[in-house]
Amino acid sequence: MHGPQPHQEFELKLALPPASLAELKKSVLLRTLKVAPRHTTEVSVYFDTADHKLRKSGVMLRVRRSGRH
Image (cartoon, rainbow, N blue to C red; front, side, top):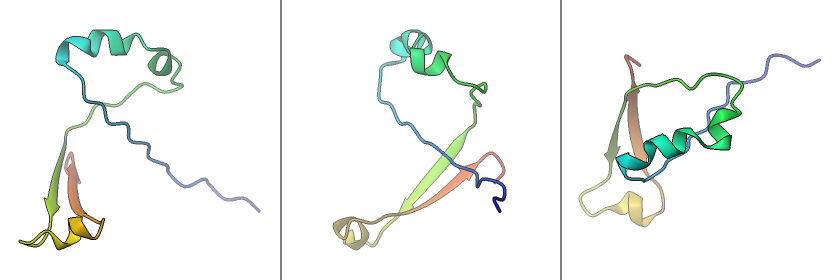
């Protein structure tokens, strides 16, 4: 028996100049989305030890606030 599919989150990070935003909105990838993109404000805080033990071990601790959550 198959239950409901778990929520999946896909994150795409881009580094581009603000002037490129109009061109990005024309991309085939964004135009073929089945649902409208949702705009949110997120704040991420990264934690590590003073001598960067987490980063040196290849891990990170991030606490993210998205809206009121």
